[in-house]
Structures are given as C-alpha cells and as structure tokens.
Image 1: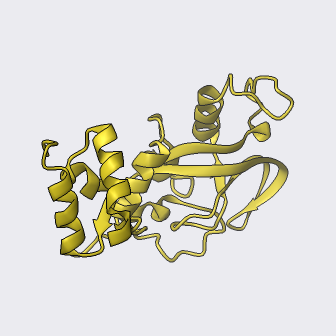
Image 2: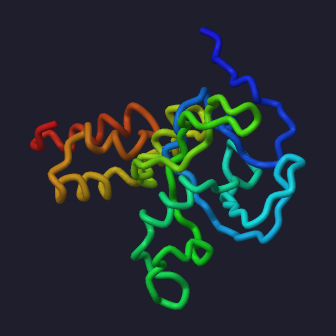
Length: 199
C-alpha cells in the first residue's frame, strides 16, 4: 500500500512542521540540543515577537528548528522542571537553559492561524520519549538504521566461548543471540562442548 504524504510536504516553511513526522506517526525519541528565546523572529514571512525555537540534534527527519508554541513550551517546562541546568540549579521553567533533552514528537489538532479553522500541529507529546534502546530498535524496524552485525566466532575462539557460556549457564541459543559462527564446524564444536548444558 502506498504511504500517505501530508499535503504540506515540500512547502517552503522556514521551520519544522507536522510533515516531518514519518507517515504522520510519532517520532518516539528526538533530542533537542538547544532552546532559544527570540525578541523578534520572522516565521514564514510573518514578523513575530517573543518567540521560542528548539534546535534538534542531527536526525533523519528534519534539519529545521521547531517554533515552540505555548503548548510545547509548557510541556517541556513541566517535564524538566526539576532537571539540573548547567549551574546545578533546577530548571524551574527556564527552558532556554536546557540542553540535549529527549522528547517524543506527535501531531495534534490545532487552530489554523491562516483561516481560524483547524489543522494538524507538530507537538511535544505528553508521553515520555522512548529509551535509547527502544529508539534504536524502532530505527532498525522502520528502516532508518541497520542492526549491528554480530561478531563471528572463529575456530581459535571456541574454547573461550565455551568457558564463558558454561560460566553463565548459556546454551547455544543464547550464544547465537550474541554471535555468529564463522562456519558450521565452529558451531558444532561449541554444541559438542556444551552437550551437558541444556539449550
């Protein structure tokens, strides 16, 4: 089935928008490197005052900064209220002092400033971001990263692996989760040496 593409994709927006979400679905974890306050800021041709932006760490979805509306600023402030900032004091709402914070991005229905109707807006989710391990799995499962290759056990490493496996009460299945085998003969040699350990 063809993937749906949000209608604003390819627009000339200066800032990140909901079209950065892959297939319109959440990005479970993305890191905001820095949050800035701007006395004046031009947003897609409109001159605005007292605006906030977030700069993301390099990622597969967007290189643009995100304008933080009231909802997004509030969610960041509440989630990181007690987090220590550079001087060791709690953030307590001073979100421009936060560095390298992980958030989850989602879309929510929002008021359209152009016509007063509704549209989808890019939001910091109320949900906790995924852990680094969960995000790595998500990246692999969704084609953004490759699974790390397992090291192949060589013939001269068989005894070391057998000793390690016996010490940890591992069978061939647990070894295969962590390692590949240089050959069928290597695998069989390990199986033979572990014949007293249940798989």
